[in-house]
Length: 358
Image (cartoon, rainbow, N blue to C red; front, side, top):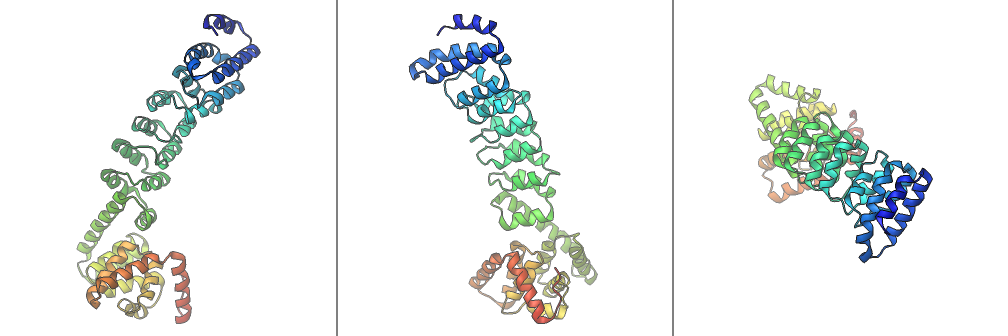
């Protein structure tokens, strides 16, 4: 096969003839042995680059599918296919090419659509040189897909960029919360954007240690502020309970504040308000030996594992419980799921002839 013979023919060929020529050349390339492929690939690329723009989309798709995962295909041809405006043409190369590097893909990001970038996000692995460009150029769907690909390495600056773009995107916030490799500084920037519900889910089940700690730190600051505000005064205490009931302050903040200050009565008041039960029913449960009713009330009231840990410390100090008993309390609370707690609450309410409004 000689490029000097094929090039003139390719320039003169009609659309149908071009398709036939490309098919023949592709067959020759794919069937060539390892020793021959080096020589064949240069000719193959030279000819195809001259006719690719005149090749029908269906034929370009077939070509990309046949050579997308092949090695020794010259980069110029692969980059041309990877940036093809037809996504079906570009996908086999974007997803499977072992020849194009992350630097090569980064160089074509400015030329392709978000749909193309979305395909790039599925590659495994992806190095920082490409993740940074995708984070800069991609739309919301691209950012979420990139973040959810844990085989994609994100640099610190890329994490910060994703956090900034997650300000009003809860789906991206959730994707970021699932990244155990998030730097502490990025986690701290993300926390103020989180809704109470998402922060609660992260506290209860995320493997992102940096983010869990950042949420805990922010919660501690909020607790400190609330403690300063009410300072034991009845009116301020009631304000904190009212704020927790109205949703202006997270329940965890109020529970943590009362537990830290060993304000058991106020804690019981809060729980009673949350479940619409009389205070005289709830107050005795706080220091009851059988902790199950308190577990149930706290779980259905939305008290996190972390905040309940402070309740355990308060009970341990007042009741002089052993560390083993305290650890067992935490284990049992962590194992109590919302569904099980709800069923137990309804059963308790029925037995006590109290409302079961949640």
